[in-house]
Figure 1 (tube, rainbow, N blue to C red):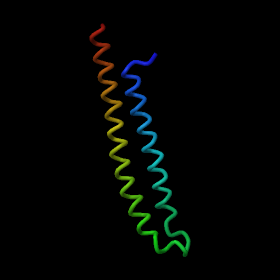
Figure 2 (figure 1 turned 90 degrees about the horizontal axis):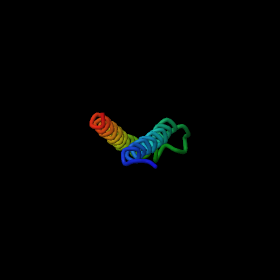
Figure 3 (figure 1 turned 180 degrees about the vertical axis):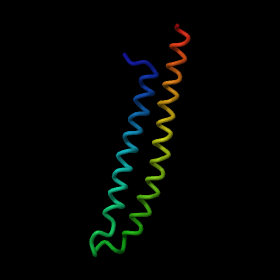
Figure 4 (figure 1 turned 120 degrees about the vertical axis):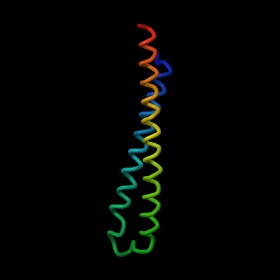
Length: 83
C-alpha cells in the first residue's frame, strides 16, 4: 500500500514525463517546419504555437519538480520526527 507521499511523488513524476514528451513533440515540430516547399504558409503559425507550448510545458515541468521536492521534504521531516 502506498502512502500519500508515494502518491504525490508519482503524480509529480508522471507530470514531468508528460511535459517531457510534449516538449519533444514540439521540438520535432520546430525541427521539421519548412522542410518541404508545400509547408511554407502555415510554418510560422506552427512554430509559434510549438514555442509557446514548450514554454508552458517548461513551467509545468518545473511545477511538478517542486511537487516532488515538497514530497521529499515532507518524508524527510516525518523520518526526522520518527527517529
